[in-house]
Structures are given as C-alpha cells and as structure tokens.
Length: 223
Image (tube, rainbow, N blue to C red; front, side, top):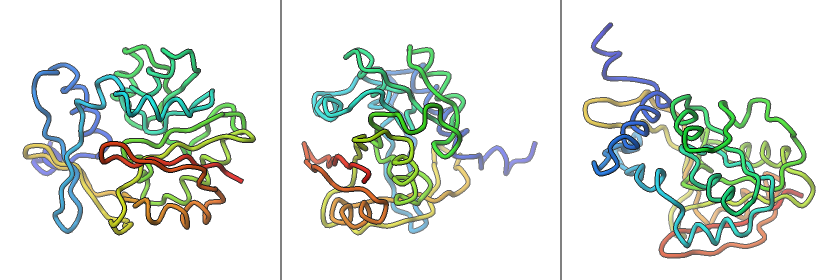
C-alpha cells in the first residue's frame, strides 16, 4: 500500500469514514472541510448533519409533498424528520458508509447516484437539495433537469442556495481532514441571485424564496 494512497482517497470514501467517526464520537469536533483550487475553505457541519432538524429546517420540510426524495441524504436527518411527520421519504446517497449509517438510524435509503435508476420515476412529490447539495456534480442545471424527470405533476424541488452577492461558480474541490485529502471533483456553489436564470434553463419556475438566519432556500417547480 503506497503512501500516496494513504494520503489521497476518494471523496466518497473520506466523507463516509469521517461521518461514521463523528457519529461514534458526537462530543468530538470534526475537522472535515472542503477546499477549492484557490485555497478557499468551507467546513462541513457533520455535527449538524447527524443531529435533528432545527426549527428553520422544519419550516422547509413543511412545504414538502410526499413521497419525498432526500438527495445526497448523508445520515438522512431530513428524511427521518419527514417520517416523524408521517410523510414518506427516501434518501439517496452514493456513500456506502453514509447509507449504512442512515439505515441504522431507521431511514429508508437508496445507495447510488441520483443519476442512476431511481424507482417510481415520474411519481415523486418532492425532492430535497439542502446543505449545498445543489452543487452535486458541478452541474446544477442538469441536476435540476434530472430531478424534474423523477417528479410527478405539480412536484416541488426544495433547494438551499448561497446568499445574494456571491458569484455563482463551479470549482474543482477536494475534501480534507488531518493529513488526508480526497481527489478533486467538480462542485457548484449557486447564489440566490442566479437561481432564476438557472432554474429557467432547467425548465423550472421559482415559486418562492426565503431566508432565515443567514440560510437561503427556494421552492422550484418543473414545468
């Protein structure tokens, strides 16, 4: 086993391992962070991912129409919160370790990419793209188009975006923790300022947008 392999790992593997470690030691702070090619850093809030939805997130979930797809669900706190409300919700995540953790918490989760075959295509009521998951794959318009194909008539996409004034950008990023880093991968950061035009490119209309305590959300509807 080479030294390079020990230092550089796939993002899926590194994320899953740190998520499991954080779940096992909830009192210990996590240091997983996302770094772009220019050196800008964003910490990943694993403690928040593993906790319960706060009141602001619950208000987002109130808008969801079941059945719901929680895209990039991680430990599936949103799917679990919806289930407690009596709303059918299924997570989707590409990380085997995250899926295993989510299932151990009682969530129903599909292991794989949202671009893989998803059961019951064309019948889902809503999809969640929270915690920055609009950035998945670095192609937000294609991601919204794909999700639109999975929803039924009148379905909603509930997204979390960046604050106004930030330039929408697509970067190569990597995950870092301690001496380890992941191989780079594309990731998008979408400002609320650019949401309308991007949604239109993806065949969606922005029905509503709002912000609470520095977090920005929107409800989109495919045409």
